[in-house]
Amino acid sequence: MDGNEILQPVETEYAPKPGALDGTVSKERGTRVILRDFYHRHVPTMDDFNRQLAQRFGIQTDNWSIELVDNLQAEGTPGASTVVGLFSIDLMPGTRVDLTPTADGVIAGRVFGSDGKSLQDYSAGFTVDGKGYPISGWIAYAKESYKDDLMAGVRVYCRGKIAAQTSVFNQRAGFTGEHDVRSYLVGELSCDWLDEEEDLIQTDRRDILWSHELGQEFERWGQGLVKKIGALSRNPMREKAWDVFRRVTNFEEQVKKEFSLPDQKDIRNRAMQIGRLFGGAARPDELADPERAGDIAQLSLMLAPVIELDEKLREAADKDNSLGTLTALLRVARVAELASFGRIADDRVRVIERVQALKDDGISLEPVFQELIEKAPWLINPQWSPLTANQAFSTLKREFVKFYKSRTGEEIVLDDFSPGNKRADFVMSNQDSVVQIIEIKRPGHKLDNEEFKRISTYHDLMDEFLKKPGNEEFRRVLSDFHITLVCDDLGLDSVSRKAFDGLVARGKLTHVTWEVFLLRTRRMHEDFLREAERQRKNANKTIQD
Image (cartoon, rainbow, N blue to C red; front, top):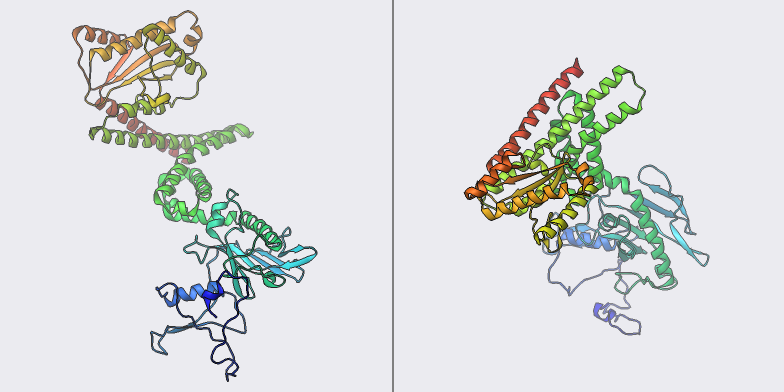
């Protein structure tokens, strides 16, 4: 047979030219196929070629076999010859579906994993015009995602020879679990009817004529099975992801180290539950990245005491407990609370260390901090919490911008999310019913007269705005205001300096240098850590007593 002639686009059927031995009788039975004139000059290794042939002829039969001989090696040399075996792929436990049809295409035995349960709503084949078209074989998830094209998808065989290879039976993109299906789904189906009535196999045996009536029905059947096995394999995929997550992050050891005290057993269990939830929801290939997996581990450790605290408080409130039992529950809740707060403070100290490093590098932090302070006001005062949605404060900011323009003719920006990304003039926050105005200058900067004049204008106009008739509702919710200036030095003349000192004396302005600002914030959080640890030890002692 001549491959080039076989692939010629002509309407006449191909007829091979008779060879020199045509009409003779051989003493030995069998057929010898000799391959010559390979398109690619690269000669595959014995193992690769064995794997490629196994993919095409991967169904064992009793009446024929394929032997590979490496003619570059001496006969009898170990590895010089081998018989092509089954195409083997390691499967994910609990994901294999076996199809065993009867002659009419109805499943005789349906098995999912090792539970022995049949899939009652699916059959090993389909029916068209009253005739059954049986499909036998198996479909599963591979243990690892595809490493080469040979592994990809489901191989469809007809009479022991490959007819097509499909990943999702032409399923359109966007279905649930698509990534896992396209990365892990493997299988081996036998459909001997593909060339019975009409030959539905393309000449190059790389695909099926899906546009044919039987091809369309086969496609619908396959798409349904893909969705079915995707749903059935969800839990095994989660278990695989969880195993990868545990291995990459050494999560159990992290949990034991983070919550090492005897009374923190419930928090350890909670951390493992959260880790299993988050780790199992991620894709295994994502978790192979230590940085990505580490972020999930840190999030799990951070949430564990918070969720445990909430659970204990709910338990204390919902149950009809005796006073002694209720007290014990609240003690355990206190341990969870301290663990949560201590971890938050520890994270904050690391953030401050990072800010210190950026400052020492000489990078201008002014525009960065304008945005950061609004999200993390605790950098100014450790007792301040992140700004939450507050309708009165949002209205005040909006109305003050209008008031400022009416008095000065200038527009000001109070946050970093304005059109054109214009940098904020200052940060406005609300803490403890007080409007906090925060002005940040770059490290090493000297405040000049013009800059102080603008700060003084902020002060005077905010004072006027809050006292303005008709703004009683603002004063009821936000009764006062305060200005915090982060700036390393002052370059003011005598008049401006006197006004500056007056604002400080009246408690309307707080001035801190970058060094003091970072030192004070870090020290306050380190004090918190020490106090939290002390209280945790006392709580442990009380519980043990």
